Length: 103
Length: 164
Length: 280
Image (cartoon, rainbow over the protein chains, first blue to last red):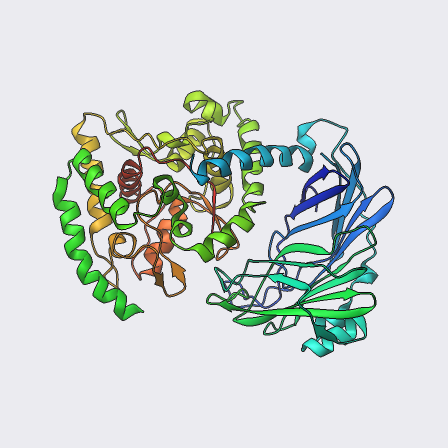
């Protein structure tokens, strides 16, 4: 899956706030389709955020995270112009990644 | 100016900014942002913890310990969720040396909703959107200095987030 | 809850009749009476806030909405719509060629009366007429691409006030009246009219939903609805409403849906476009 990640990373003083929105069905595996059959679980498992070669945050998600999942967190460091890499992998082995610029 | 007028202008600026940062190939900028190779280690996903059916079982699987209640953990969740499919929940704490954070929804088929690894330098706070199957106690757990602390809140759900 | 609403419906008959009787299809008089009813009944709600539907009525919901609106899921649809605008049809033309001002910042003018066609044209119908005029198949009226392109168009009109015109043409006035009549007529197994919920009971819970006021109710469309786990158009919302009240949903582009959207949007003249929106 490509182009699924949207990021807003803003540096303010010595802190960078990161908000991300990822396009992903996050099917829980508990919902039935129109035919009455269970839609299999299909959800992101791990999201990793990297800056300056280090992991600055890791999300471990289960099927109870909402569709098109959102996340907000902050880390020390980062300034406007720096790169922030966001990557995810799901339970089917699909993945996507994006390098964004901190504003 | 009403509150409403401030929101869309700010949102419009932010969304347009976000659209640039989001980066579709068609933007044709070439430089940033750009798609990259995702070399995420999926092995770090705690499968056992995500299958656990109780708070105790979840915390044992995730951290190998149990939690004590603490006022220093703050859990921001609505009294009544507008829709169980998308419940905005935020956790923050004033505890020091935080290395992990987890959010449990006790009445969900699987109790653990999300867990976070917080390396040194990251703030011990997170905002996310979770599914709740029905009215449930939500528990936020923080790992600080090697011990677990928690806060909980009951969130009422009228429309379940699991499709029912 | 249902019993309470049934009692309320009986009261509505009176309220609705008085709203209806005020102008009996005289748009300007109707407009005044409609506006007066909502602003007096909900005197603490700032006028422009009515376009936020249930969030103007309930603080708990409002807080959750604000959290989601920080980075709303409809953003994907807006981007997709923008892409659609940038992608030419097979004949080389684009959506920009069909709309005034290249389709940017024009959503607040819809629905409008099309003198050549003799009927009311909504934004969704305009999109499909554009496609058909350029050799493309029409879109499904309820979601996906239609939701994306109208989400983009709504986004470019954010904050602009509704500017719905009823020209001096008996056909336009007839369409307005048909829309008004549809709004106040009871239908379906539950024998509810649109007014039963959206005039009599805004802010109240019906089953699990908080009812939006009819004033400005079309301003936030299309919407990303948590209940749908995705986007839906005006058509989709109207159809769902019909289904929820055990009535018969109409097809996208149906004259009655176009007319009732015309009526409701005219009643919202001056209120800002808030779409695309998030809803429970």
